[in-house]
Length: 492
Image (cartoon, rainbow, N blue to C red):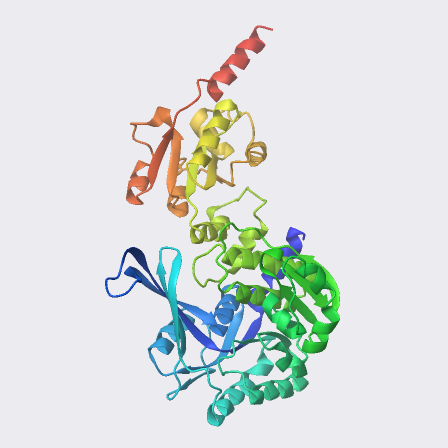
């Protein structure tokens, strides 16, 4: 997909209003470490280090849609309990409208609690009601839908079979679609239940597709087999567009039952897949509402899901992270602000950020060695490069020999560099300000600076950023190379 097309689609996300309907679930992660077995029973003892709440179920769909920039109305049902209080606080923090949340005193909020020892789940226990809504609560939900439905560009039904989506609510949505056919996406383990709505998009995963088809499909040849099953999937769902997700095998896309394309997944060594389907659905829905064609939509949804599976726990994907992935082939950034999405993604993935800086006027083997060693000190290497005016102030009126644009192009061709940011002003030619904005994990300098007070030392101490000194190759410096060239030319 062309970057400008991607950018044009993403730019529209904040101008869309989406209604999310579905089951509210609170995900809680109790994390710790285990070094012993309980004397009371043959089970591990977990010493708790932290307790963290995340939004799950339809609440995670709402959160993803919101962090991608859209305005979100969330129609759901909770109890009047602690889980509801903690979950609604998270929704409010995200800027999600709660005017259509129905709280029921007699209902217990759905919550999933996981106890983790390191990266290993020890146990998960679920609490909360899964029975269908009573008639009174159902009518309150329908009344909310009738108020907000016509104001939205898209509607997402996220059905987790916890009792929220009743036959009466489905019928109410069918009536509303007749007068206001907003884009409708559905994600459910029972997609055939929503066939009367004729959804614009459904997103079955591999297991759900097998249930729809009424047959088991071997994993080895599943894509080949499923590719021919489009007409039957269409018959069962009546969906205009079907995005069948198959984990590491990517996704298959069908329009009115006809196979359109297969989109490959992003390879991630240790994926954390909880909530990735919610991200995929949110990104695909917004991209379609913003006019993307199927190929563009498939790529956008895959990129978004790829961002999430690199994170811990139930997570979501932001618009800034998607924009950063879109421009990841463009190393040159005009400012640190352009890097904000990439920095957020790197930190969410636990990657160590390394920063170094220099003029890099005439690149030589010493520079290459230094930059390669700098990258080896962490995971992401960001290079600050002095502007032409800054180089002149530091090196004299005859420098730089190579103008900034050419220096940027040369550095961008070096594989170990991830991003390059120009810096320097009439009042400050040091990298102090850029370090304060980036807040890298490591600052790298040549060993010839070891033991010296650097211009950046104060900010490095203030932000507790460790400095690493790299031994230099015994090669001439740029200034020495220029001097040697001048002598050579003079002798001609």
